[in-house]
Length: 190
Image 1 (cartoon, one colour):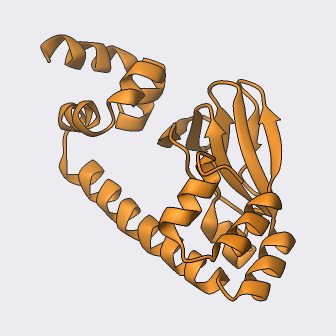
Image 2 (cartoon, helix red, strand yellow):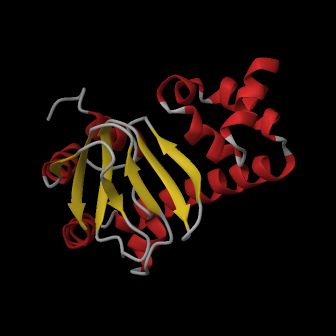
């Protein structure tokens, strides 16, 4: 296993697997490719696999019959699984769509459970991921509640500039909860 492998690096720096267990774990993931505009996850489905983003851009959103609301974008190498649905075997409320061609590595839930039972590390993994998600989601919700669209845009400029370079502006506008024309006016003022 190459130490430059993104999934290997993620786990070796974040979780206390021994190297032998880590290599075995990484080896159980399968490569999967999705095309631009393809849905990876649909509302009402139950997560049955862990997905690690190797390459590409994925948007996460809620949708009703008449509107969509972007809630996140994934660009970096990270897990893009709905962990609540995965852990509790409940239907997700989210959609995930590829904004570019996407390469992910996937691991079935059963393979994950088999491995974590063998090495007694599953509980730590799930707890750590959930702690991070709770903190991130709480922070994101607070920022969306207290800031104006312009302040949110400035926050993106400061903390997630890659979004502005790689994600279409109409998707950024949806994330901010405004129309694309309003985003254009904000961009002109800034």
